[in-house]
Structure formats: structure tokens, C-alpha cells
Length: 383
Image 1 (cartoon, one colour):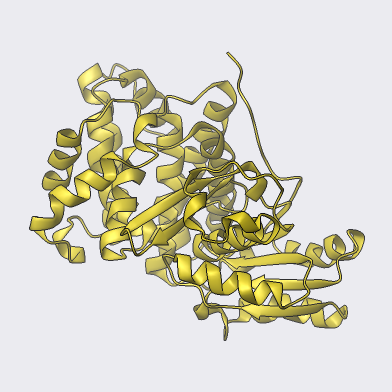
Image 2 (tube, helix red, strand yellow):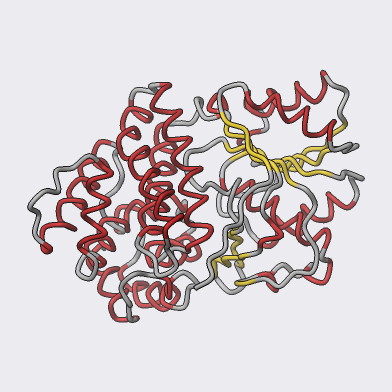
């Protein structure tokens, strides 16, 4: 069997590492940066920390901030137009997954104009050219978009979250500076942190997983699970650093192995109800983990051990239950909603949601084969 790994050219880690953005821009002889961020960053200290570095070093830049939490085709199209008029030759993506995903789409289309409709990038994209170089700075705990080959854009006309997979979209440089994560509100830190834990668990429980991705995922599970409560509720800096590292490591894994039906179901919820992606994953995760536990108890033993749980003499039937109980306890500490009704989902839409989830690109990778009726049953259970 042939396995492939695709990662960044360069990555920087640690508080204060954002200053390396200047080194990279100067050493690579870029003339002007196009900053892609979300509207919430405009008045934030995170944006000023980056623009301050650029100003100090007389590096030209332009800011594009028309990015929604679940970015749309229209957000991307407007960004492409603005990029073309900017004369920039490097993109700086600043934010969580929404900003970085939008930056990836802009980057790809700028160098592959035959995909300017955006929707033709859905799925396994066969682009000819690498995108405009991206330097990505993550400000959240969750998506690891700064290291993955995936990006997600909502097509509102089809009510679909497009999962675009393209090696040409991987940022050339990623910067994990925990100073940029300290100001996250608790609710955002909680949901994005659970998104990262979902990545690690789904990446591990995946048909495409193998030795190297297993190594990443089990380490990510340990770092995120053991530290997320303190990172969110106490703003403990060591815990924040550990979760930040864990989410990146999870990204190195799942980008190369794939995900499963937690993400399929979350994509459907995001497309139909515009529910934030991390929150949707968090609500769905315990139920899908119990569903998957029926077929791979040894993998759950391994995950439980990474979480620090006592998995000795645990039966096959108990393995998933022990892991899921631990997830539920963590989610209660993080104040994650427990049901779909709590976030505004209507019972009459469950069958439509199941249809969309079943047809999602992540579904075939799930460790346990799931039918449309299986997914509908899960939606009803969570409702």
C-alpha cells in the first residue's frame, strides 16, 4: 500500500512566533500582503499585532474582512476581486477556520481562474497550479486549517457545505502563536477545542488511517482532552499552549487520513442552519463515537489510554462507553449544548439533514459503514 503525507513547508510554534511573518515575507521577496480575516478581527488586538509588525517593517498590505463564520461562495468571489485589484503577491490568513478557508479559496482561484465559479472546487479538486502563497496564523483552537489540504465553503444556492480537498491549497507557512488565542471568548474556545478533539478522534477512527497518522492523532487526543477544560475555563497558559499544539498535530493527521460522519452531520447542520462548525461537531461527537464503538473496541481502548482513562480489563462493550462518558463529562464542563433542539434545529428537517450528511465527502471514510437510515437514527437520537 502507498501512503502519502502532505504538510506545510515551514511552521513556527510558540508565543511571539508571529514576528517570523516579517522574516518570511522579506526572505521570500514578497512585495505586498493581502490579509484575509473575519469581521470580528477588525477592531481586535490580533489584527493590530500583525499590521503593527508590517507597518514597522514597511511592508505594504491590504485587508479583506468580508468573511462569515461559515464562509460562502459570495465571500470568496468578493475576495478574489479585491485580491486581483490589490497587486499583492502573498496572502496572510488571520483567524480561525473561516478566514483561513476563505484565504485558501481565494489563493486557488487567483492562480486557477477556470475555477472562478468556486463551486467547481467542490470535492477532490484537480487544479493545475499551486495557489498564491499563504502565511496562516490561527487564532482559534479548532480547525488546523493552517496545515491541512482541506477547506470548506458554503454554497447557499444548493444549501451545501462544499468540502474542497486540494494539495495546492496548503499554506506554505503556518504560525501557531498562542498569544493570538488568549482573547477567545469561552464559548468559542470551547467549541473550537471540541472541533480539534473531533478531528483527532475521527482521524484515528478512519479507513484511511495508518501508522504515521495514528501517531499524530493519539498524541493530539492526549494534549487536547487533558488540557481543554483548563484552557477554556481557567485560561491557563500552559493548557492553552498544549491545546494549540494538539489541534495542529491533529490537523497533520486528519488532513492525510480523512474524517467521518461526525463531520458529515456537522456539515449538514452548518449548511441548513448556519450552526458554527465546532459547535455542531461537539453536539454530534458523543453519539457517533458510541455508534462507531461497536466495530473497533481496540481503537477505543487506545484512545481511552491516551486520554488517561483506566482501560485495563475493559470489555469490548465497555470500551466505547468509557470514552464517551469522558467526552460527555468534558462537554458539560464546557457548557456545550446536549441536543439539536437547543440550537434551533426543527424535527421535520432531520430527514433532509440525513440525506445531506449521507452524501457528504467525509461519509465513506467513517470506520463503521453508515447508511442513510443509520444517520437519520443518529440525528433523531441527538434531537
